[in-house]
Length: 301
Image 1: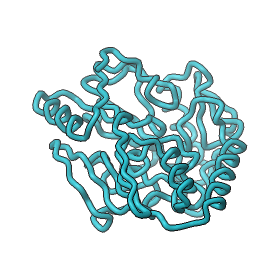
Image 2 (image 1 turned 30 degrees about the vertical axis):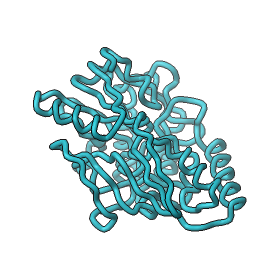
Image 3 (image 1 turned 135 degrees about the vertical axis):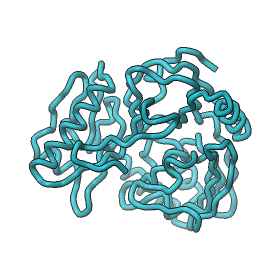
Image 4 (image 1 turned 90 degrees about the horizontal axis):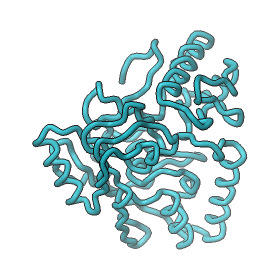
């Protein structure tokens, strides 16, 4: 447990103030216990994985910030795996590929955790998590831990029905047999594509906006003239317009201002309402809930 911990160390944007308390639970039972005791004491609780899709406020976070990166238990089955939320998704994809198991080739370059990937139905290169989920074990707001089968969950583009209701602590994934060399080759190609097309050399949180139906958020943002533009230390990437990078001293307020300006301008010019993929922890909207950043014309989810 750490007090007054710099939150910029816990997310890939390298942004955020101090956490009042940060705790790294070692087991699911440990996390549930801390959660329940905090709820009874009316202490705010925030849950972070690897912080690869998250914007944290400059003011920091009150209460307890739970970081799941120590929840890394894994059990391989017959073309299946049971894995805790803090396990690195890219590592899991690589290990499955080395076994000759197909399914997570798309995920080899995604920097997040398994829990976060399930929660947002992460995807790339035509694949997504939902296609490989057999069951999910989740921590609910009352502190109970419950396992749900795939049929009890709803998934859509960058959406899981657990979002806003519970937090993933473990997932059971299924694979199919494949050609070992082909799987590894595909993953290598996907990583190379990312390196060419994405600003991996600067702190970022991946794609900022969801792609609207039949179009590309990056294309719309670039067409609106935002590529390379900055507010404070936050800049629209010169390499990919749907990425906002931290040039060294970005604040959350800079990122928020840039997101809102882009969304409003794209709506004004093209009549399309962009919605964000990244989430923002906002104390004013309640303990532990991820808050979507919307353009001023968009209705809240």
